[in-house]
Amino acid sequence: MTSTTRKPLTACRQTLNSGVMALCLALGMSTFAPAAMALDSDASQPINIAADALSLDDKAGTATYTGQVEMRQGSMKLDASRVDISRAGSGEISLVKATGKRAYLEQQPAPDEKLVKGWADTIRYHALERRVELVGNARLEKGDDTFEGGYVEYFLDKRQVNANNSKTAQQTEGGRVHMTLSPRGANASKEN
Image: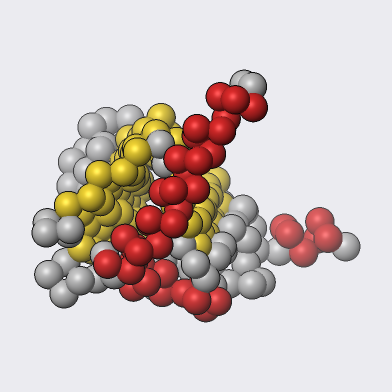
């Protein structure tokens, strides 16, 4: 890619970044930060979203970002082909939906903990419930433990994981869920 082809995209992203900050405030995006599996300092960090296009419906309380969407706030990182953000009547973010060829989400839960990473065809973050759904080709890495299936659900506060081989929490479609659980003392012996 030549520098002349990069300039329009860079200019578009810079324009989106400046406009997005106002948009995020209008949508109540600041309420998204504390609800994400976040370090305490993440809530005070600026939110940056880069995308190729943005469609905003302020009346409906929705925003849609498309084309190599990169969303960052503190230790939180979300990459997808498309991100749809919806807010509740109260103005708080209610749902962040990321789709694309294996959308990706990561977050640092605490300074002394490893990143929590998730991949799926669709990632739905229910901010008010503090719950993440990984749907279709789903994988969650929590420390040295991994969970894979058609559907993986992660409750942030409880740090509880539910998984099955379907694309919803209720259905089952045969097949198996795969887990790798590492012994708690395994990391300590590797470090010595």
